[in-house]
Amino acid sequence: MANGSRQAAWEFFGAELKRRREDAGLSQSALGLRVFVSGGYIGQFEQAIRKPQLDVAERIDEVLRTDGFFERMCRKLIDDKRYADYFAAVVELEGLATRICEFAPTLVPGLLQTAAYARAVTLAANPFVTDAYVDDIVAARLERAGILKDATRPEYWVVLHENALYIPVGGHAAMAAQLDHVATLMRERHALVLVLPYAAGAHASMTGDLRLMDFEDAPPTAYTETSFSGTLVDEPAVVMRAQRAYDLLRGAALSPEASLALVESAAEDYRRCTSTT
Image 1 (cartoon, rainbow, N blue to C red):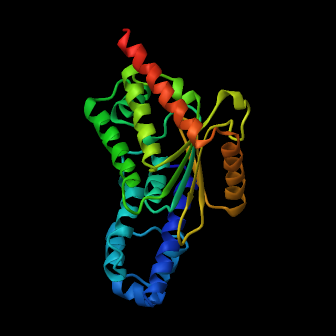
Image 2 (image 1 turned 120 degrees about the vertical axis):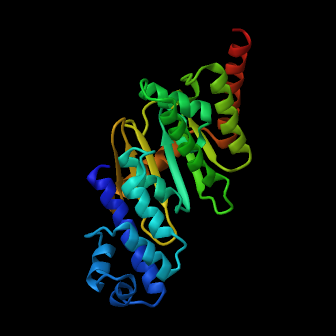
Image 3 (image 1 turned 90 degrees about the vertical axis):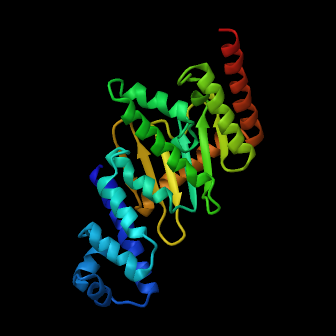
């Protein structure tokens, strides 16, 4: 994980620790006594100066009755190999978000992907890996997507560039199924997907993917990604610029109704291609 991404995630960990400790009416010293570290260590955890060991995170969960939250976040940050290092913190944070806004310039984003689509994307970037490796990556991606079906699911906005509809990832049949899946999520109101058409021309995020996440009791974050690295930030000025860019993307996109019609039309085009081959 890039240093900035990891640090932002640990800062979120620290902010949550402070909030939940104060909600429990405990001082740093009192919590430290109960989890067998000093109060100064708790303060350093909260400031993201020092990172807790996994067993300390487990004891914090027990004392604060946080149902494994700090253990899970700690595990994701230090030892989840199913995700690229720079993306692991994002996976943990998206499970806590109240709203996720994503711009996808070339691919259907991970939270919307089918197994066949995810498998094709993984193999394209990793042509020499084992089937077991691919299976793990695909399973992790589908597991992430489960948050869209939860009762407490976040609002999920996607601006999907028209590119993503016409790059035939996995072949025509896989693309028809993928776009059918996106359309179903749109119709069931699990995701609000807006298509940015080719006709829009230049747009506000020409350099790549963009993701914004809002939380109930923590600052919003912005995440940008290139092929081999990602940056997660919560600096207010940077997040505000990213939010403005996203507003511009939404303003240039088609309406929800026109977007759904275009997704369904593209799916039908792929089905026709499949039936004639």
